[in-house]
Image (cartoon, rainbow, N blue to C red; front, side, top):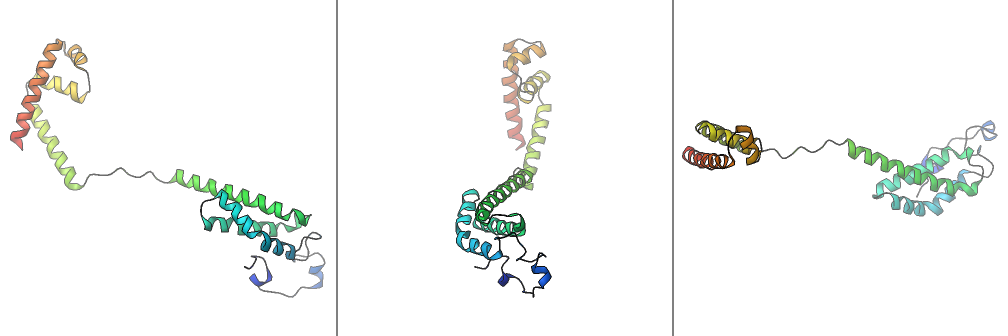
Length: 194
């Protein structure tokens, strides 16, 4: 296991004396916070940090990414880590924060995914439905006016028989009679059309 910032993971370069005195090298960290300490922390605590991420996330790849990113971030901020004993605490907090961010991105991604399209009828089914609709309209036109009005209000406008009676100014009995005769006539017309 090679730490992402270790010498084995990147090309080596000679250190100039000026850089070692406070420049941009690994040795120019806060006193006591060295890459060696971070590498030791990596070796000793990588698996426990992976376990922490696993409690927060659900797949191994994401857990490994989060832990690697946590080590890289702590390494990048090593000048601010004054106490090397707190390195593990910083790493744990970074793992938790990165896990939260990963979960937020997932939730946002799920919200932004397009909603699945409803199942569409095949071309044949659509043509058959259109043919049935056309036959129904033709059969409806063949009904008596009152039968047609009652059926349209009752079944297409989804009115109750009492509401149909009120709208058409008929008795409830007349609405029932026109409705049953209209359905019988429609059934006969649809059977002869088939």
